[in-house]
Structure formats: structure tokens, C-alpha cells
Length: 467
Image (cartoon, rainbow, N blue to C red; front, side, top):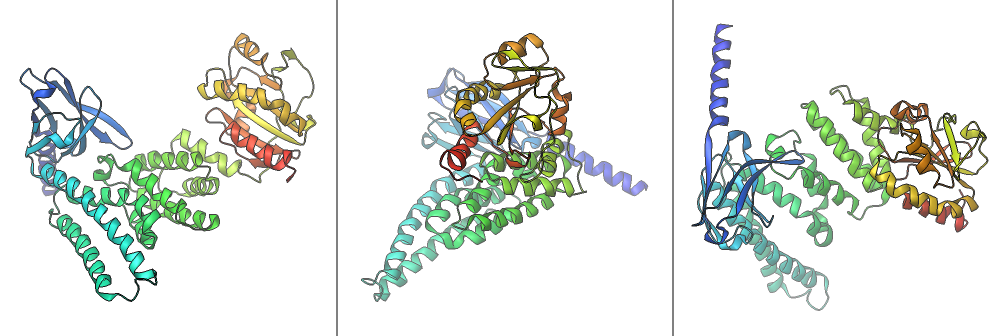
């Protein structure tokens, strides 16, 4: 027990000394005299300011960071054009003209920063050359005019192999203990996605597998500024891989399983990344994939979901497409065309073929845009058997009545905000939130916008493709 305590204390001291050590970023940039420069770091999906300084009259400045900032960073001047630096626990010295023109700046001190700059210059050139050689390979190996000419074919393959090896050798020589040895391959993976999807589709399976093998709790990823891009690129590549839609969802669900499993070790990041991915899939209308994510996250026992995320995901388990939505009692003030109405008393008593149930409030920025759109589209929808019921989460009577007088559809408010029974029954965690129901209250659609509903109306009702 005593030995363990001493060891723990020693490790704590080493860690504390490492994170407390100060490192400098100095610059000689005469063209920036008098400007303010900020050093910005990354933490997950966010950024934070580490230090700031004013460039002296002769163009000098100095900024400080410590071991806790290890990762990637930006130097941001007054024109808001960032200059990338590696915060690799080393002093950095820059000399040149303007941070907003990286080609004019030279890194005189900072081993990892010099390596990063070298790769940032050389890799795009190799990628550009590879694009040309890949194009020639397709011509010389598929076009009958060139297919029998073996010498240039072999020369093309040799040059492609040489360029790949040159790139790989550079990365392999960085040293395992350096931050850039982790960062540059990940940056390369993310930046290659668009090219692979368009010109090198044979690499799609291996690229998706590389994303799946990533550790999303890795502190290096969290401090890299690549977390958002990594997740977006991963799912974008699957979506644009040329598969059928059913196959796309299968592959996305496999990737979701990998990602969730990698997050079990860190509850905070499990919540943060799951929430981001859910919103990403929703924004792209990939509802089958977001539903799968919701159910998997809710069914796991390794991490505790925060309340907001749990409520958001629970909507998919309880309110998924095909389920029967709860009936809604029209409590409080019920207004239509600016007039108070007493009938009907329930949603189920409202005569319509379809219902659009909308939850919102005057304090909701998105609702301010959506509600006027709903009002303008209401005559067309009504003509095609669609009724709108707006449930306001406002708490002030005058505010609600003033806004509701502008709407031609039924508007309801009991001034209980999130405690409104319908809001609880429908698992409302944010506004605006909309559901499209049929006459039996079966959920047909969880629209992400008014336009989404209008497109459905045009296709299934106006054009006669009735469900």
C-alpha cells in the first residue's frame, strides 16, 4: 500500500510537471506590426483561446502554451485567416510576412512544426501527381488503343508505387512519440475521402475500415480539430459509396456499432459524440441510421446518457415511423384564425386524412421562420386533406394569443411549457418539432423542415401517389 502511494504520487508529479511546463511561440512578422494575434486550441468540437499578444512595432510577438494544450492549434490575426501550428510541447519560432499568407512564413524552430510544414507542402504535390498517373492508368489499362503497350503501363505502375512509398516513408520516419506521427495519417485519411469516392472507388472499403478502427476517446483526436471532420467524412463516404440505399444503412449501422463501442470507456465523450452523430444523421435525413443509433445508445448499459440526449433518443424508440402517436387533448386556449374555439376536444376528433402536429413557441428562433411558412402552405395542404395542429409551449397568454391570431390553423397553449401533457407524451426535447400522422395517428414522417412536409404533400397527395 505504501509503495503504491509513492508510485501514484510520483506519477502525479511527473504529469503535473509535464502539463505545467510552458512553451513559447515567437514570431518575427514585420508586416503585422500592431495587430493582435491569438493562439487557439481545440477541445472536441469546440475551440478555446490559449493566449493572445499584440505584435510590436518591429513585428515581434510571443505567445505561451503548456502541456495540457498538446494537439493542433491556430494562430489567428485580425483578418481571421488562421495559420496552423502543432502544439507539440516544443518552442516554435516563425519568421516571415503575414500569417494569413502561410507561404511567406518560415518555421525556424520547432521540429514537429517543420515536419508538418514540409508534409503540408509535399503531400498535395504527390496527390496531384497521383491523380494524373491514376488517370493515365485507367486509359492505358482499359482503352483498346493503349492496352497492348506494356512499357508505359509498367512505367505508370512503377511511378504510382514510388509516389505512395515516398509518402508512406515520410510518415513512417516521424517517430512514434511525436504528435504529427498520429495527426498526419489521420489528416490524410480525412482529406482523401472526396478523391476516393470520385476517382479511386476500389479503396472505399479499406478507407471505411480505417475510420471504424479509430479510437474516438483518444485525447490526440480530441485536441486535433479533426473530430468533426472525421465523423462527417466517415458517414459521407458511406453515403456516397455507390451502394443501394438499403446497403448504405447497413454499412452506417455497422460503423455506428464500432463508434459506440469505442466510446464506452469515456462517458462524457459518449454523450457528446453520440449527440453530434445523431444531429448529423438527422440533418441529412438519414432517419433509418439515426433511429438505429438512438436504439443502440439507449440499449447499452456501459454509459449513462445525459437527460437531454436520453429524451432526444427516446423519441425514436417511442415515436418512430410506424408507431401510433398518442392522442392529444386540446387543453388551455384553443385558437383558429384569431378566434377562440371549443371544438374539437381531441386530435382524434378532428376531421382530416392527415395531421401535421407542430410543437413550437415564440421564443424559438426556428419557429419564427417555420410558422409563417406553415400558414402560407396551409390552404394547399388543407385542400389535400392535411390539417395542422400547432401546440405552443409559450408561458405568457398575451404573447400566445397575439401570435396565434396570424395562423389559419388550430393553435393550442396551456402555458405549461415543457410540462404540457402533449409535449411530454411526444417526448419533446427541443423546438420546432413536427410529426406527420395519418387519420389513425400512425406516424408517417418525422420531418426535419417545413419543406420536407411540403415535398411529401406534393408527391403523395398533389401528384396522386397517395399512400
